[in-house]
Image (cartoon, rainbow, N blue to C red; front, top):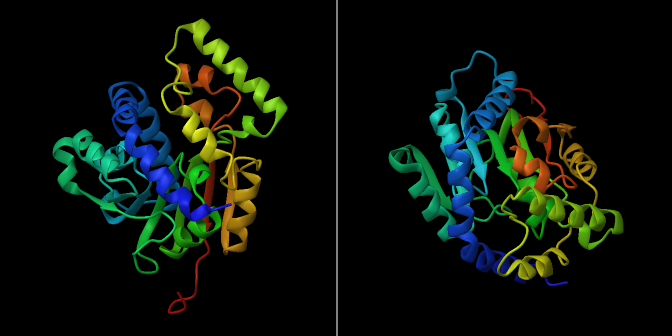
Length: 265
């Protein structure tokens, strides 16, 4: 398995998907999803840092795509840095951010090889990225490294493409497609070049692994205190998403970096 080539394949695929994926983010920004996600993110962060103003909290979004999370975080007043491997996605993110783009540091960077120094951020946040990485263990190690002592990792993801490896998941996936069509919703799981991502998904590590148990085990080994919230989809997904992705519900991996004695970080 050539995991090195997958990085370039991913970059090419998401370059082609940038405009269409941006439209999905634009719809989220124009609907109640904006409020739902803001409430969710703010609740998670404020619980970890009670009484600390948002402007004093440094947040890194890994895999910003067309910028949805970065825009929300900026609107809430956080100090935001957002990275993505794909320049086309960053270009869409800047357009979607509008005048707020000047208050967000958008950087082209590999999620598995961050250029930031240790302890640079209070929060690392990501959505729908980890499943797609060729070296997810390495990514988690990097994300933990750039968190300060007492920092917070929030990773929203799902068991995407598990249907390629599991008959029960395949049946659930096919049921989701049928129900999406029945309800008249646009199906984000079909379309041009979708077979390209299926081919990539067959060759990356996490597609056939049940999560978030895997994530919690890895993060525990990195000195984090993790927990999984497997019902988070009920609070942040739209009615359309609940139908389209019923068999792959979104989970949250929440992990706090253990406090270190002064001078030991």
